[in-house]
Amino acid sequence: LYGDASLENAAEVSDSEVLMIGDSIMLDSSPQIKEQLPDCYIDAVQSRQLYDTPEVAQQLINDGHLNITVVISLGTNAPLTEEDVRELLDVFDSETSIFWVNLFGRTVLWEEEANQLLLDMAEEYPNLTIINWCDLIKPHIEEWLWGDREHPNPDGAEVLATLIREDIQVCMTKQGHAPTYPEQTTDTTTTDTGTTDTTADDGTADTATDDGTTDAESTDTASETNTTDGE
Image (cartoon, rainbow, N blue to C red; front, side, top):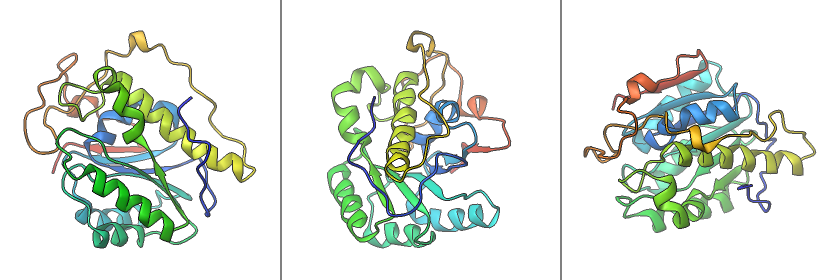
């Protein structure tokens, strides 16, 4: 549906027990991601900075949350630097398959430069695959994003979750592995009960809301999920 059939990853890829590390873009999408990949572990925090994340990633590994595949969704809160990207990538060994969701957003003025940096890093790190959220979302901004034109609404969150699962499974299939989780069938007419961040990544109020609930109310209480509102 959304997956890029050209993607590959040099490390072994699995859609089982995927570790997810992200900021509020992932946080907003965490219920839909859990529907697509039920046994994943999500650590998503509003306003998370890339330079703070290597320590977090190492602790998640130490705590046993990494199987063989990790998905990263970071970079909307400040420009990416090669040093910061490299530092996070180097937390994982070459046998870990890494998927990084690229950037899109009205306030992400460094979007083009950052997305090119991620592509350049993927040339150097064969176990890094870039999930192209940016090009997918551009024709559907009004449909899939809230009014801030950055955070996914419930329909957009479903698309992002599907994109992540499908891109992982594209690489799995090329490696001869059968997907653990099949395609999900979702009635998008009933997805308006989701939630969104009440504060955007840049600290400004996010004026787009759905049913008035907040991130704290939407946090997945399952033991496999750790989604947090704090800085």
